[in-house]
Image: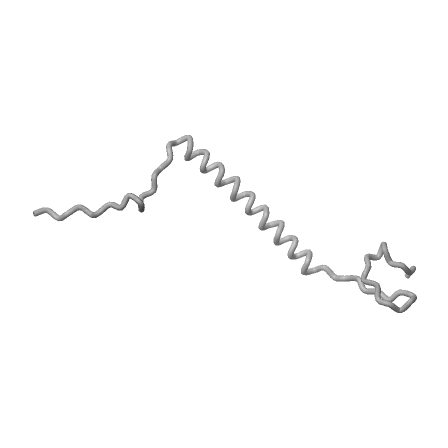
Length: 77
C-alpha cells in the first residue's frame, strides 16, 4: 500500500493575484513604504530639534526671569 499524500490545508495557502493586480499591489506597497520612510525621517528630525532646543532665560530690568522669545522681550538688553 502506498503512503497517503500529505493533507493540504487551503487556508494556509496564499492565492496569487492575476498579473495586473499584482502590479498594482507592488506599486501601492512601494508608495506606502516611501510614505512611511518619509514620516519616520520627519519624526526623527523633529525629535533631534526638540532634544537640542534650549529655552532662553534672561533677567529683565525688573529682575524677573523672561521665558519669552528674544523678539518679545519686554526689556531692552
